[in-house]
Image (cartoon, rainbow, N blue to C red; front, side, top):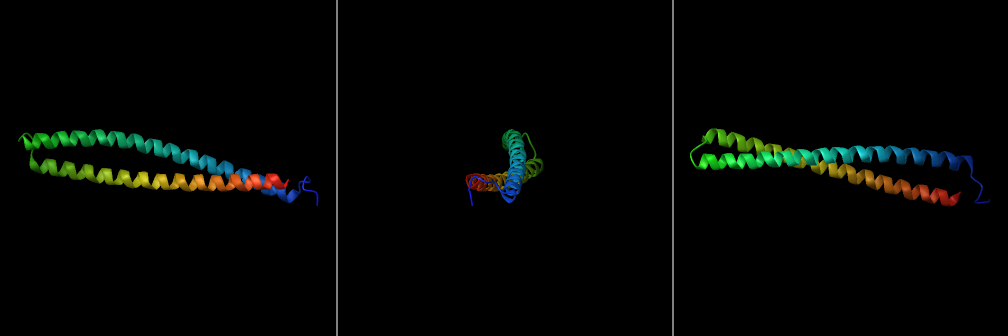
Length: 115
């Protein structure tokens, strides 16, 4: 069997791998965009947290009620916890997609060498 001869089976397999790689690249780009958006949200939430801490200072000086301060701080902590959970999930997904992409690239290279 001449290794320079490309069999129809290898051509089909190559097309499948290329399609999978393209889909994974699209998914990876989508997840990267979601991560970028999440990072923007994080920055916004950090500003809000700073404002909440300023509000706490007002409370400590007697300029803000205890009930309002407790509710606001609890809300901000919950938002931060949700944000952190989303970031962790997005990071996990991006890592999985990068691993799949690397694997497909290696398999594609192997098949190209066989052709």
